[in-house]
Image 1 (cartoon, one colour):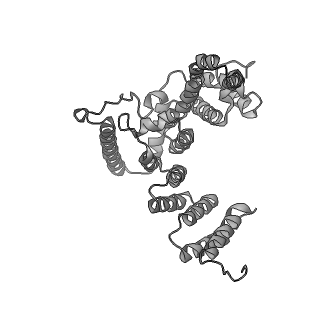
Image 2 (cartoon, rainbow, N blue to C red; image 1 turned 180 degrees about the horizontal axis):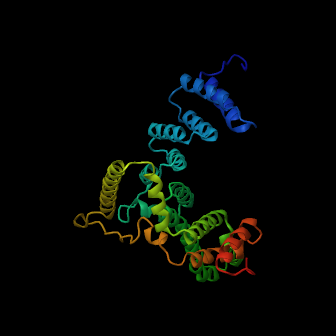
Image 3 (cartoon, helix red, strand yellow; image 1 turned 60 degrees about the vertical axis):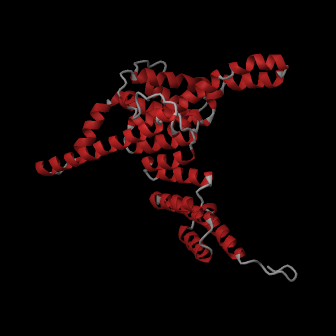
Length: 328
């Protein structure tokens, strides 16, 4: 509309199309994806330099089920503004959901600034739980139980640290007489594991550990390899295995080079980061006590999330396998 003598600016149409696309693709039920994509494509043709347009198109494609194209568009948007942490995080999330966890980790480390401990250690130190949950789901979808468990148990470690950190406030709060805030903090700490990130991580980890009890990791890997080469002749299987072996060696070499770079150059005065004894989670996946590990997480859910039906479903799965029918 025109107010007085002032005509709408040239960007008005573009923002109107953006709003229309978000409404049609994400705001109505059932969604009208074709109309939404047509509107956002018109907006991009009108002003191809606005990052929000590509993010909206990626959201629409993700809602329509095209995760791979959504991740590609988000990466294009990220390149348009390399200083935008939000767009980078959005790109990481889309890549995780598109089944590209390795590429997503590369993007995530772009904003991690810890040259001494390495960018991956920095992500852990920042307690970036949404990233670890997305990474766990992505690795689980690729049947990499070790890496998935490693990310999920990192979330558990964050909550252990949060619970232990309350001791740092005891002497301070008593000394400063901030007693109401102190008591409020104590009550929060008593049920800190009721929050959603812990519930999601614990539930996913319990399911993986129960799966490891039913089918040990060695059996899973053997079955996956057998299915991968099913239908091949003896020569084709041999060539495929040799190719897979070379690719694995190449991946391990690249991973070793990355870790060496993260450790830093001691001669240059940088500290040496502690070596992760289980970077791929292989030891976690090879645990000999999966039910005991699952029970540890289950006890936290039973204490702080007892009203959730999922807690009791998980308790049934764990306790029946332990032979504790009454507890199930």
